[in-house]
Length: 148
Image 1 (cartoon, rainbow, N blue to C red):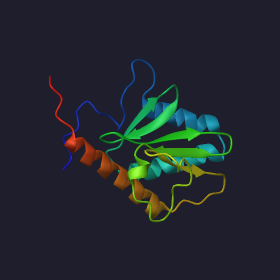
Image 2: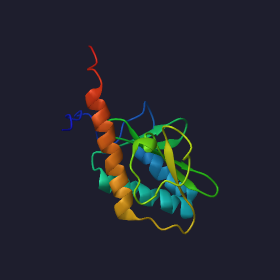
Image 3: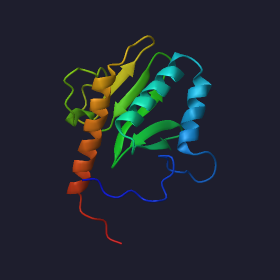
Image 4: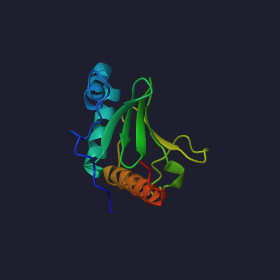
């Protein structure tokens, strides 16, 4: 069962100190790219939000979009030839349709590299997002409560 989310949360975003919200910064990155990478980032973002309407968008590490729910689900980096979604706990997730195609050697993370023209198995991708969220929540339930 999910814990109640703070009432301060607006539009699924955490407001950084000063400046634009993470959602606005991600919007700007998509527009700035202006090519297939922006379109791909926008598409996976939409799918993430459809899979988890409670997702929180963040902007970390000097410009990396991050999607979280009870912990990091994935990050969305853009490079010249790929849009890379790195799942923080990907090695612990089942991947029956073999979506993970990058960072396969690590003990924790796994990634999906999307290249120009790649098609997305939307059903499998959403299932992977939901599995990552469920794993985050199960891990959060095992953590001791923080003291005030």
